[in-house]
Length: 263
Image (cartoon, rainbow, N blue to C red; front, side, top):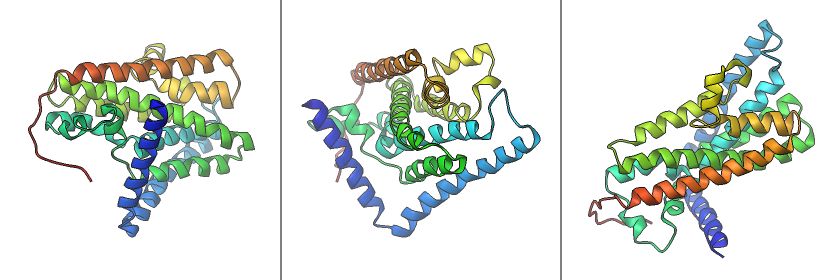
């Protein structure tokens, strides 16, 4: 019953956030278009790279575009549904969590889904544009959806873990921003270019390996049930860890005593 209520809350927030942004229609569509255009520039970059070399460690143009599709999809899902997670540090630092604490909802979920990034719709649309460019088979279009959702959940969970540092140190959100940006950067390159130490980081602190590399290699380019089960287990673990660290951090929160409300 709790899951059903939380899902209803998430989609209600999404609807309200989109309706609010859609009041300024030109800005709404421009944000989406500019995000697609921004991502499209990197297609040109890789076309140039592969005009010089036909592959990078066995990864060709289509395989790298698959990485881009998964990366853009998980980023888009995270910022469309749970953009508030990226603002937790700021709320803690300014003492603005009070309004969420007084509401009869799960505090973390309430914060995470309270804000949406409209430009993230452009990232999600870009996923299917990339699949069309690469001539993907029909089942890739279906499989990419749960893959991006799982990747988005992992990204949000890692961000929440890092943002929870804000309960202990000033501007802890800077660490979270650095981790999130690093994850996005590394997710767009073939895993074969990384050394052993880098790969350890990419499957632990900066879990791009689980978000992008595992789905690409063991769902789309091959099939390995054990890696898929490992991906699901890691998702449950990091999501549970995010709730735990936020709950522990919340005990140290000092109210800003602000008289404010939310519409």
